[in-house]
Image 1 (cartoon, rainbow, N blue to C red):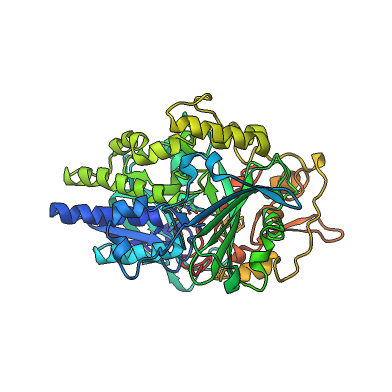
Image 2 (image 1 turned 90 degrees about the vertical axis):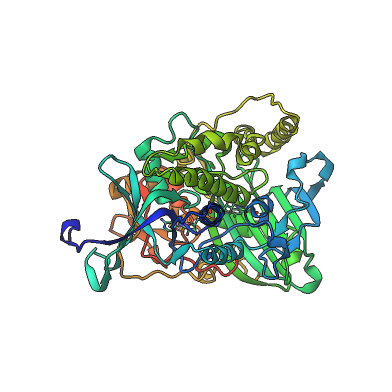
Length: 557
Ligand SMILES: Cc1cc2nc3c(=O)[nH]c(=O)nc-3n(C[C@H](O)[C@H](O)[C@H](O)COP(=O)(O)OP(=O)(O)OC[C@H]3O[C@@H](n4cnc5c(N)ncnc54)[C@H](O)[C@@H]3O)c2cc1C
Ligand code: SF4
């Protein structure tokens, strides 16, 4: 059925439509309703979320800097159902070699790296709790609905979004239970899709929001949640490590966070500007857990959950223009992660609040569908801008000089920035992550150890415990623009890196005798991390939203 033959969509009108019920989107919605109450205005706010519930698609560390929650919901620490209860009480940094490692003394760390006063917890649970707060303030939240299209008015301004049609078969034909998507129209639309938002990507291209900015940069973060033996559990302990198993040229590192109830979150972030197409982020993560300093934590424990998600790493110099006619970007859709601290949730909330304040002023002044340029003008001098400015050179120095020289230089730069100056000015990132992959002929295949099923695991058993579920009879949401190019380049030149960088085993090159290799996409396994959209060397894969409610169902990641 063509678009013209489909029944017309029904629509609803709001003052503000928010795409994404993560910390950024919910902070925007909460702040808008708070301002409405303070001013005695009535601002209608709706939030759409592609996960089956708020929090279902949230994967983070997380050590949360409470500065965002303190500003948004100041009484949160006194509430009995508060989502963060474990305060950091011990903070360790390690440089690892294969057989051991050195713990770095805390006094060499720039003060901004100190985790004392932060909280360890599940950002998914923080999000669930924020969603309740938002609803109590009168925000409408629709989980299970993916925003699949941006709506524009005749002047080219954003006028809202459309949710995807439900009940479409693999070939694109309506099935028995077909339901047309809805138009959610707003005087302003807030894009809070998180790292590599698929509508955000289109908006950046359409409005040239990245003009004059450095390319966006990303890492892939993989994470497991473990229940460990009581004697291995040290609530409040935060451990960060870099070095092994990655070589000096590949950026990344690991974290272990001990939260309440004998739960330990272990994760691994690998910078997506890696060059070797044989590298497998998933297998590097599995290897990390076997390191002698850390393996003991997991002995006798049980893995409860697994997931993966891209994290933004471009920082200050990569943030695109945040405003355009009818809409704004907030949170990781814009890329507000402080890379050396591996923290973005506080800036997600603070940027949402800042956007809400500028949008509320515009709404009260009777404006709509124009550019709220004052928000763009305000963020660099706000707490978010100041947080990112101090660490802006860490990622470029790490990328340029590798782990062993780049990290000390980055630390020096953070120290001098704390005092108000930098020897480096503001460094650029250079290539995009897709461009940094080199041909397979320049490397030897990497042979990773086989998983033991106790401490290390394979991808499929991992995806199983991410509770990922998609309706199978629907169009494939991972769109390969040119299959010929995928074969002649991704397969022939780069030896099929998608098979390794995808943390969920979605992509396979099926080689059968007498036939051309065939690119198989097991789309139902997709955990929505967005890595393929970022790392495909030809930018030939577009991640689009599958039917709402599909994807992972993370319990408390
Ligand atoms: C491995 C890892 C570790 C991290 N560790 C930390 C840490 O320790 N501390 C910290 O502060 N930060 C950490 N971060 C970063 C932090 O998670 C992010 O900064 C934060 O989640 C950004 O919030 P957000 O609301 O902008 O985006 P997200 O949290 O990504 O939320 C976006 C939401 O929008 C929904 N969505 C997206 N597109 C659509 C659509 N089209 N339609 C409907 N819904 C949509 C998504 O399903 C999701 O629920 C980590 C990130 C990773 C990946
Ligand atoms: S298909 Fe893409 S978005 Fe989905 S899990 Fe794999 S790399 Fe991530």
